[in-house]
Image (tube, rainbow over all chains, first blue to last red; front, side, top):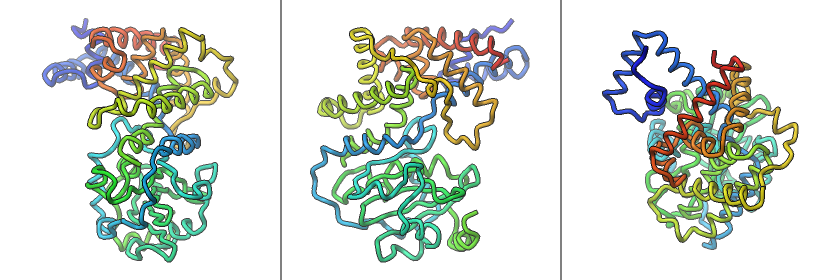
Length: 239
Length: 167
């Protein structure tokens, strides 16, 4: 008979035990199949519960984001405040780790839609509908900087599910986002306004908005690719 | 947008997830999220920068849910077929069938829990708040939160076991 009750086992799975007790539970579970089975049942119930209620992108978030942004009466921001040197630094992604939203399970969020024509950027299915931006994502390299319309790519990386993903910036719309290659286009993963330079402290550590950084951190499998690997991925159609 | 607005936007998926734990129908969950956002905006001067916006927002949602459940009997609409049979997963391509079935069963089981246990399970097991954070949201001592969480989880496991999910 195990000396650990259900509450202790739950606390172990929730990270709510002190280190010594946690080690004691683990050691007992390693030697006691019945205890290990009880832990596994509780663990699977947790996995199923989280799968039952994922935090995920919802098209209605865009309307709520506009409602939230409604109180912002500051003048329009100047375009293109991105630091391209940082975007060209593959390992710069790590800066986002500390900014990731706690409990950010699905790794996807639609940020504030403050573009004059936000509906034209993404279609209802979550695919990028802006043809210029699709072309930029398909062909442009980070080293190219922005195109004539202010659209540009930043980081390119492989996601944990094998998809190719790229961050982008639309300077004229003052938006930045993350898109991953899907069968029929680029699926939006995160989209957020780029704050004005005098806006807030939050942007000091990075030039990507927090929702985008959080999405990158939750999806990236390793590091962002080098410039040479970016060319190879582009020439292979990001497939 | 300022820090408050940006953080609130980033919270929307989590707020909707918590709302889906509290109410069954998608329309009710959307109403709950909308009302939470409106109240958060109205009360934003009460929020102190540097403190947790997620806990604060969850507290607002919990109050709206409890107030309206008790005073108006809301959140009890007829549940449409889509709400009962459609399970959303973060990436349908990745989710295997077994997990989908497990998730469907878990959703039913969680919706069947008493309200106080459902709130505890939603905040800790689903959203991942610490016991102390969840207790603060629910305005109860940590011991009370823990006891509700344990009972809710035991009930959840029993239900899932009965359905063969975690056997």
